[in-house]
Length: 102
Image (cartoon, rainbow, N blue to C red; front, side, top):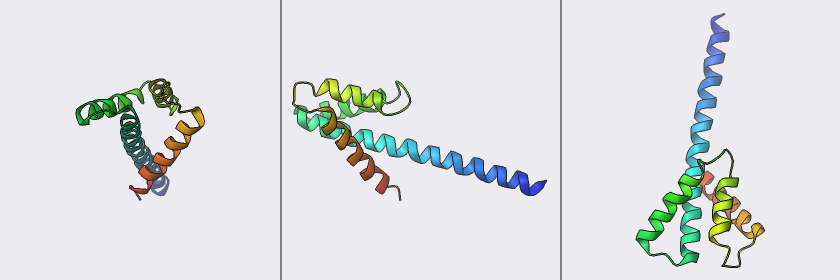
């Protein structure tokens, strides 16, 4: 019975670790997205930092990435950025964030 409990605890620890890592990757990706968009919008450093925080907060609206995507899409609606380009950039920045935690 002890080995079963040990395995259970190991799986729980791995799950918790994986969830924490995914949270960190998402937060880092959102930071990079905020930097990218703020550059397009021509923000200064203060406004850029505020915008990055807004993007990070937007990610808490719902599970998944659609909340961040909608915010970015709305903010870039006057800058000729289509859905495909935004999603591609989000994927690219997600991969960059993942690589920093390996």
